[in-house]
Image (tube, rainbow, N blue to C red; front, side, top):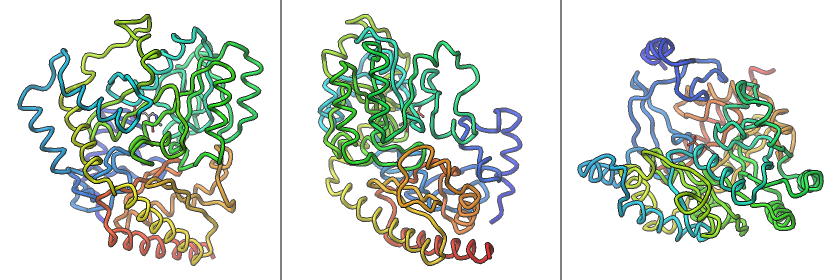
Length: 434
Ligand SMILES: *Cc1c(COP(=O)(O)O)cnc(C)c1O
């Protein structure tokens, strides 16, 4: 695999962007190689600037449920662009997308569009604080809610990757209002509520964690959070930026049948363009300006191109009602194959999956339930596995703390190829380890 052009582009970019990238996990530092620069994507495949191709399990980190360059999404963007790219005034397209979202997420009676998942979670937190008149909130170690200051305490994803859970530049004052607990542990949440009576505005959670690798909620956990929030008059926020339209058409709240007070969305609802949304009951949402006292705004919010791409994406979901069942089946087949490949090579590990998001953890454990257990996994093995798979044209997230995403564009033969590659790579690793 020749990657000279990618390396040239990387050196050029290093002079322009810190670490050569515009988002840290793209830098490939975790997997000890230069990042690949991408020329184009088509369906489930990515093509780099050297002309190599890869079966893509990153999918732009979640949004690409129907693969790259889907003709219906491209067409929607093209049509919208011809009418103008931004007006700073309302358009019917925004209501069309919102009506579609509400159909799948009935808990989002009203919503507001923003430009990223980060904006959605920052704004939802401000709204929860404004609505309850309380300052503190609870988040869970390893959950990532974008790069807003208050959330960069025990955050997952890129913030973890660099062994720097708390970012420099986040003040102590900000961090003191952020209370953290262990994911899948209700007792800790109960204790935090008991120790901070009438002070906690909300609990925010990734209902299925994707940002420390795929970690599902234990049975009863989300229901338990719901009850603790109700008992303490705090709001429950499901950050479904990743899980929304991913683990089910109605997200984790449909899959696990728990209704949050506020939901944040992003990724898939933008069809690959920058969009975020947050929403909940009319009562809570009407606390936002111009009706209420919580301020939040955006020059490009509800951007016509982004809204058109998102609408096309959700229509694809609507028109393909079997898609989640197919993803479930394909996900099962792939993950069973990967688990068997681990066994054949006698390398300890488990594959955790919810729908079409999954992670292979190199561990002796039978399940991974929280951040401490994730951090105890074997990272050297991950580096070898990642690079081995890449050499066999399989592109996984370049970090052990991420979920892989499969989409409708991944075919049965793509899955077979992935399993075969994994078997070979793991056997090579086993041999080299002897
Ligand atoms: C990706 C992600 C975010 C942040 O979204 P951006 O669009 O990257 O700002 C927030 N929460 C979760 C759960 C995410 O996966």
